[in-house]
Amino acid sequence: MSTIQFDFDSIKQRILTNLSSKSEWANFANYGVTDCLIDGIVQEMAYQMQYNEYLTYENWWTKARNKSSLLVQSAVHGYVVPRKQGAIGNLIVSTDENFENSYGTDIIIPKYFQFSGNDIFFVSDKAYNFSASENYVKIGCKQGEAKSVKFLAMGNLYEEKFIEDADVDNSMYDLYVNGIAWERVDSLFECEPTDKVYELVTKSDLSGVTIKFGNNIYGQKLMINDVVEFKYIATKGADGNIYSSGIITNVETQAFDINGKPVKLYVKNESSLIGGKDYPTIDEIRQLSPRVYQAGNRASSTEDYETLIKQFAYISKVNVWGAYEINKDNGYDPWTFIPSSENVVHLALLDSIYNNLTDDEKNQVIEDIHSKNDPTDIVQFETVEKIPLIFDVNAVVLNSSYVLSQVRSDIETTLVDNYSIENMNFNENIYESDFIRLIDEVNGVDHHTSYIYSEKTCETNPNAPKIFQFNIPLYPISNTKTACYIKEKGEDDDTYQLFATVDSNGYLISANTDVWDISGSIIYLSTGNVSIKFNNADFDTTKEYVVKVRYGLTTNNIILKTRKDILMYKESTIKVSYE
Image (tube, rainbow, N blue to C red; front, side, top):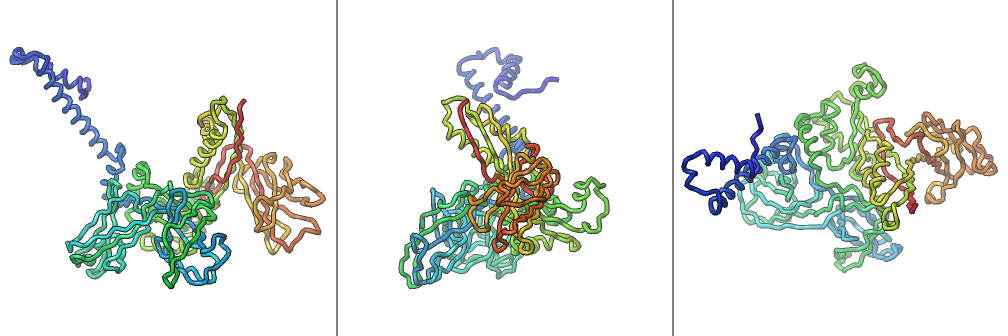
């Protein structure tokens, strides 16, 4: 049996066939006005069928193509879509252009004080006191442009106000009623009648947020003509990340000292400002929302833990495992009893700027999951090892119609976009065929020879200042792609000196035996264990040093060895030339 088609031609043909079977049709001709009328009716029917098909797809969780379709349904799951998140970091602020002299009077830098650079705005994340005696002050900042919406309350029960701005930051905002700060809550129905609280709900089409107030039973109700002010930042999300120093140089807000006198400020960023995120993709929503429902706001499995923690705005990367996964990693029966691992939940987490968690952040995680996990669970935080990747690319460009500098820039952008820590995940490996293909596909590249290196550093141990022992996380290691360097701690990286290469058995070969006596030092190529000893009698043990091993593997497949490791782009050396 053939399938009935609902395109324009099929619908029209069926109508004409049906009409021609009727005796009345003989009095009409199939042309002119009659034909135009039939075409108009058929076109509308075809449009209706297309729209019905579209709605069918959009109501099918696995087929929907619009975020709004999923987000309307995700409320049933209890999933709350995170909005854009602004990049964070630190800015250096001074009253002196050279950042070397103090002002002599205290200056208050309020929250939402604005700075900018390259058309990207940052604001201070809280109020800071710039002391009279300080040459400069370091302040925390967040990417976004300060905004404020004021309105008079109508005095309605469950009053609502829609803020039409798709860029409202996920976590930096404040609401005041008649100048008094109110608190955001997840649900008004958990609040007392006098609680000064509100809900903040993201619209399902991501066009903005709705502020909801109480009814004097569940949260305090607004009174007529109450003055409400909602302060927030409009963020660029991932587009607001800054990876270079010296970008933020403009002060956008007028500063005053404690006497009310205007003060001119100068600003700079000495490090990257990152952590900016966009709204989750449709595939991320499709995957995470049902898992939130399945977790049921509880943590009874590693997947539950991961689902819950992924919703914490201050966490960027999550990996969770327990005894089951440890058994699998070691090739045991997954249900083998390991006394030391029972009830232990291992958490490998990075904060919003991709650093290991501070003690305060760890305590916050414990607090946020305390009411949801089994009281017998033992939460153990693992120190994440961020394994740096150094790409060495030698590319030949098709012909002189391609500008070498542009091809080089495109290769670098491709590597950053694919392998920066923002875009890498735990348990994600890199295979040679994938990264070779990525460079092959860069416009203008004819062919190339490329390798991936990594590096590991170790600092002086005060108890054994001549001995450096550590583990390289990736192996097997290629001795021909490995070299050892040393510098004084605190010095710039360009002061590293080569002190050894490696032979085929892993033993270190001194780059200058008159300077570096490292006999007996070895890198175990098959396991990554490193043992370096400086035997020089004149080795200065009063100084602190950093030893760096830059290494390549015997294969360009980069395979992680433990669940707490994550790969990340660090730098690249890219050479481009014509044949």
